[in-house]
Image 1: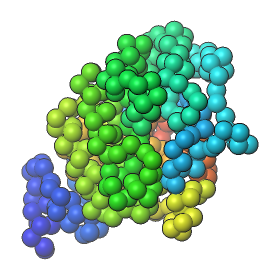
Image 2 (image 1 turned 90 degrees about the horizontal axis):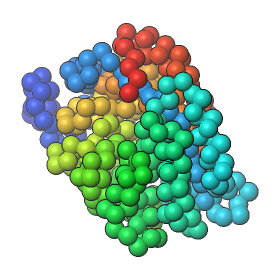
Image 3 (image 1 turned 90 degrees about the vertical axis):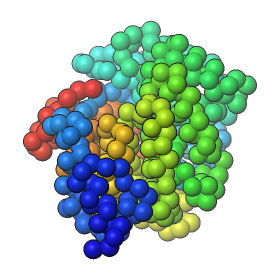
Length: 353
Ligand code: SF4
């Protein structure tokens, strides 16, 4: 066996941290069942037999976006046939409906970067959410949106985050990280904030006591080395702040995207999804949870991922627009009973977060 691979396997057997070359060696070895068994051992050490889930309602406020990322199927220009923007009275209606969901514990708000909506609009949504659902966690906005609010209102990231926290935002979302490589970002999302800005906003949020998730978008034009570099940058920030709760992996959905058309991309297969979940569980030794976002993975792959180191199946969702714009045909929500049944089939124990 190759020396680096041997070292990786030895480290895994004693729970030591893997380095860049060792993670690459494990990826290239492609021994899926070894990765599954090793990642599952880490998962069970971290969270035992528990698999977490959330009863939540997603709200996408608008799909009108000034960023025009080639990776995105969700965005629209103002005036497009598919364009929508929820006015505050409509958001109120959604929240009042959500209030009827038994045991709801999270509202999840993520949107495009509307060129005409200012920070006050988003703040009003947060205030209204807090008013209608005072005991529900508000997981809202990615660093990309935070940077947009800061630019539009001429305030610092810290001020924006502090204001959101004061009005009820408890968690920042982990999206917009994509792949940190500047080479890739220049092609897939040239106008989006840089990797350094994404990391800096997360650093500030964590220091202010706002927890968040982290993410990676894989399966487009990135190299395996760029994926591993991305994971290690997230691991480095976690060493510093300990503010990340879960890591999410998003397989790129090429349908209806400029990027997919330009490079003739196909969605990666289940093997790649499961391998990346196991590799991530092994690489991110300082993360408590690895989350499988079932709406993107499809439920059969998400369920299988529980044998590959994932320990969180995400939420019941309620309604989802961003991923479905890319042609994903998974259902848009799931009942608590169905989510728990899917978890129990794996012999793990469903636990609401
Ligand atoms: S990925 Fe986000 S920022 Fe980029 S175009 Fe889509 S909605 Fe806008």
